[in-house]
Image (cartoon, rainbow over all chains, first blue to last red; front, top):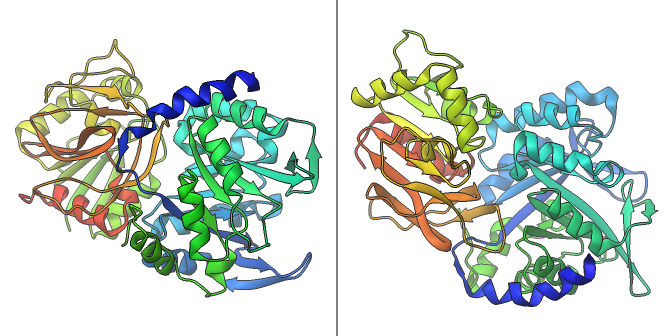
Length: 271
Length: 192
C-alpha cells in the first residue's frame, strides 16, 4: 500500500500549482497539569507557567492562529476539572483550540467536544484502537479529528511511539500516516521526537515527505527555537507549525514570528 | 438587550457559538423546536452534513418558521452548512433539496488537501479583507448574492447576502475580532 502511494505522490504534486489563499498557521501548544499550564524542566519537575484561560487569551491577542492543550485530561480523577477548564476556555477564546492527552474512548471524545473543544488530538488511543478515528470522524466530522503522531528517527530508521514517546510500536510510520488519513482524520500533528528540545528546527524533510504523501493538512512539531525554523518548515510544505517553549519562555512572541514570516513573503495573518 | 435564537440542528455542540454571540452583548437562546417567542435575530449553526441538517430542521418544524422569518426580514446568520441549506442542492447529499432562497449548489472543493482548514482573507467590496477561519470540504462556487469570496483551488463564495439573511462559509465564532464584527453586523440587521 505504501509503495503505491509513494508513486502517486508525483502526479498529485502537479496539482499544487492550484492557487490557494489559505494561510500557513502558527499554533501554540500549552501543556496542562491540574488546571495549570506547566513546562517540564526535567523528567519530573514541572514549572507553573500560569492560568490556561489567561495565557490562551494572551496568545490569541498575539495573533496565534490556533491553540493546542495537551495532557489536559491525562488522569481520570481530574476529569470534571478538565472539562470545566475546556468550557472556560471555550467561553472566552475566539480562535479554534484542540485538546488532547488521555482520551481513551469515544465517550471521552464526546465529553471534550461537548465541553466546547473544537478538535481532539488522538495519539496512543488512535494507534491502539484505530477505529476511534473513523468513529469520531463519522459522529463529529473529520475537522474534529487531529491525529498526533510521535516519530523518532534513529540510525535513519523512523520509529512510531506511543504513551508520550515512551513505547515503540511495531507499525510502519508511513503506512500509519496513510492509514490515519484514509480513516478520516482532518489533520496530522507530526511530532519529530528526535528534534524535540534540540532547538535545531523542525524536521523539514520529513514534514515535506508526509505533506506530499497524504491529502490532509500536516502540522509540524518539535525543534522550533526561532522564527527561521518556521519559515523553513513552511517552505517545505508544512501547513501549520506548532511550538511551545520558545513562546512560553518569552523569547519570542507569536507576533514577532508572524511579522518575520510576512516580511519573508509568506501569506500570514496578522491580527 | 437583543434576543438571539440559535437553532439546534442536532449536528454538534453549540457551546462556543453561543459564547461568541453572548460576548457581543446579545442574549442568546438555543432551541431545538420553534415556539411563539419573538427573537431579534436567528443563527443557523455550521455543523453537520447538508442532508442531515436539512432532515433535522424539517423534522423539528423549523421550515415554515424560517421561511416566515425571511419574509419578515428578521436578521439571520447562516454559518457554513447553515448557509448552504438555503441554496438549492449540495454534492455532499445529492438527493436533498435545500430551502432554495438562493440559486446554486454546494460543490466539493477542488484542492488536493481536504478539508480546507485554517485562515484565509476575504475579497470583498463591502467587508474588510481580514482573514477568517474556514473548515469545509464543500462550498458555493458562484452566486449572484455573493458579497465576499476567497480561493482554495477555485474561488468560492465566502459570504452571501439575500434580504435579511447573511450567509458565511467560514466560522465567524472562531475568527477572533474579524469574526465578531461580522456576527455583530449580521445580527444587528445593519446594512453593510
